[in-house]
Length: 383
Image (tube, rainbow, N blue to C red; front, side):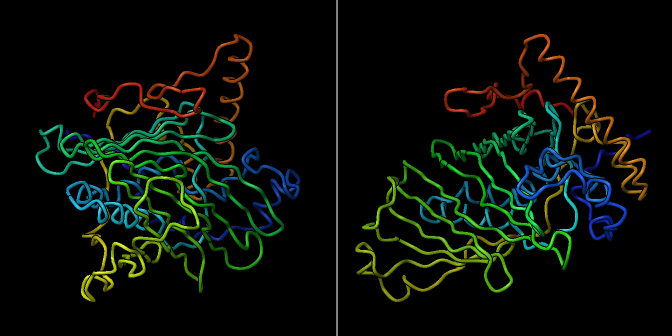
């Protein structure tokens, strides 16, 4: 008998995404916890506000959805087109969306693994592997590693955030760092994503806006990109400036090229005719051009049939089932069990004087950066 494939609901569009939230039934259950300006990451929200999957599952689904684009960028030899291509990859991961429900906040030590097979299922190197792990509880911090050995591609970083409740909104301040490596060329991202705002939380149609910069620096090529994401004319858009320096940008620095596009769409770019190196360029050289094409449907990764006890899919199984069945009373009870188990775990650590140890990542306490423990971790990936 064949084994049923493991699925993540982060890859499935279901009616739960647009299910109406009863203000009377849901908000009442946690309203007394709320005060303006408080840290909402410490609130136990009712399951009526949640999607049936963890934040780690959402991160994997978004990053793997257009992994073929990242592999195409790895083959590009022009360093300018390569950093512009990374801007296009950024756009694909930040689609236009209305906010209705959120994913679960992962518990400490929660793990989510996935992979994409690009050709021969027996060719272990021609696959893209990804592991996400929740490595800190407050502030909530998850670490990520992506590897494609055949393409000599590595993506590594961590993401943390803080959320503040307004009168009719939530602001999410995103922090973290990342590295994208193509063979011996490395791009450093001192910030992995802009800040996010959830508008009309209680009254009016909810929608998401982005605001902030994502910077990419490549010392080898000498290029640096500053991608500014903002909400303009009811759309989240990106306007990028590419500089031919890897040093901190000053007022004297002139952009070498420009990029623009809508989040979730395909961008365009053009050389800046005012840059000294472009003065002799022809009109054809200076015309606006399209970036890398996002080909085909979104890629849906595969997930291990053998899931760790602390995997996202196992951890939230009962809550997920109840949300899909629209049984919020059961979902809330099961969610409380998970949160209570985590409280007991931290109480045990405090009593013993021990610290949490990540399964996949090590913490550099001086730099406060989580890096993979084993560079060849993907060789031990088990289905």
